[in-house]
Image 1 (cartoon, rainbow, N blue to C red):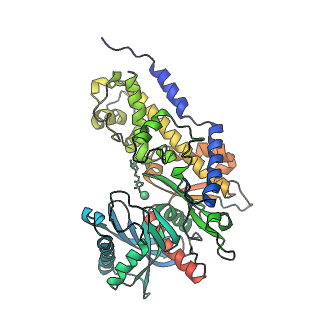
Image 2: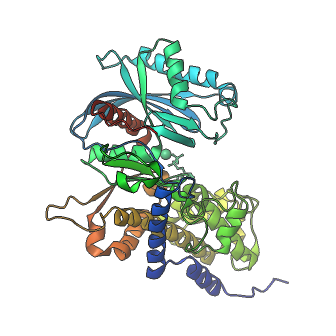
Image 3: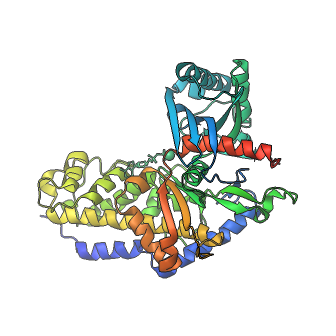
Length: 474
Ligand code: ADP
Ligand code: MG
């Protein structure tokens, strides 16, 4: 006997749509909460949305010139780059990737940092340098949690992403790198430590003569913006120094208390099975690492109600994180009729997710598309809130003069780059939050490779700060 569903697919979808929809009031409430938490994080150490001072006190405007190195230690690769800035917002770049073995990731810190220094040496030998300076300046993109006390000083808090050199936490990673370079007598000085979000801001600033916000929508989500230094209350800096500082918001941790975020049971499901439960809920509703998993939670719920695939699943659909966010992109880009043999959604379901073809009806294809649209739209609208909240907080939500240059936002990450309609949906929510005119001024552009160019610009910025006596240290 075929089981009889207790609800119709339309009823189920309407219910899900309502749970995921952010209306005008919700958008505005979340934006207000964002701004409250900006203030809180700027005044208090250890906030969930951490508002980390980066000690970068300005953003490039594109007139900068020179040759800088960048070293990027990400998840799997180590990358060395040399960047030549042409002073007109353009640059050329040479780069090479070096593999980091598991042994290095888990051995003594000295071995890892010696390897990094050796890679810089190899790079300089293989590619030469176009700089004639005695000493090359290098920016270091280190995508792990650090406690920064100056633009070139930061203590590793703990490792993530499979790294675990036991003697590194608690040490200054810039010093570890500099010591390794010095041991090899390499004439490179590491003068800036930056993360990818700050890199995106600096890169976009250089490319468009100034930027207000750098934002990442990739594996995770985060934003960095230029703040009035008097508002960074927790630093307690003496007056007379620089007027601004870039703040790394760590907005993934916005409203972990869930005062305004409309968290659904599907989000709770994803959260309770995640590594850090109850942490970074906002990020889990937005970013590439989690979107597919939220969609999978909704789709399996529909299977459990017997309104999708006649109640059948597949081993992959039952597997955590098996429904990648990139599949949602493919599904949302698919405009073929559900019955067409070229229908990409059908292919993802049958060929990739291994749902038996006889269980996939045309209506199921439409259902899956709709679920992806619902989950993806919420992500884009929440992303808009983050952007609007920063612009509002910094007094940049509306035009301030007749020769208004607009509000430049540099973005990076696979979700904003590849997810269909993401920016369009983000803009729709921006129109609600900032008004028609406010939204039009927002210029969103890819700050591609913020971790390479951004690190080089970090080195440049640090050098400028040294020269002008604007070094800030706590
Ligand atoms: P990272 O954040 O490590 O710098 P990316 O910006 O490439 O890297 O983001 C990787 C994340 O983006 C992964 O979670 C992946 O699932 C997701 N992703 C990869 N390709 C796509 C795509 N085409 N559309 C949407 N998301 C994608
Ligand atoms: Mg990235």
